[in-house]
Image 1 (cartoon, rainbow, N blue to C red):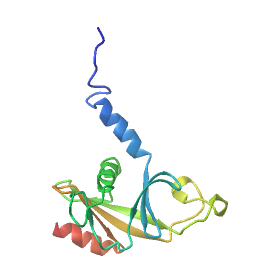
Image 2 (cartoon, rainbow, N blue to C red):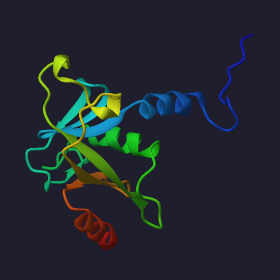
Image 3 (cartoon, one colour):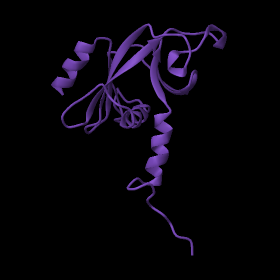
Image 4 (cartoon, rainbow, N blue to C red):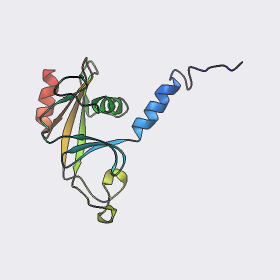
Length: 150
């Protein structure tokens, strides 16, 4: 008879460990009007953001619905936010914004060990209370004010 092990490494389930390892290796950054959840430069999932002031949610049927929100929430679980609320369900992350690079001969982003530095920062708020929502801000004070208002 084969035993099924539901736990490994203390109290973590095997499924949780696999998910954690998948998300730890991913980076989140902006290039032009796309938010990248990537495992390498030019390789990963993108969210179109022509207007960063428009929030995205995981509420199906809503005009703000984006299927990538759940992946951003999972990523947020395994990365240290720069700020969080007291209930630990709203997180703020600083996200680098890179210029568009045409081909690898032009270099690679510093997040992947390259020499291309970000041109600015955005601030991403991930709210996991109830319907998950991702908001982007180009101003840190605005992002902090929004966090306080939630």
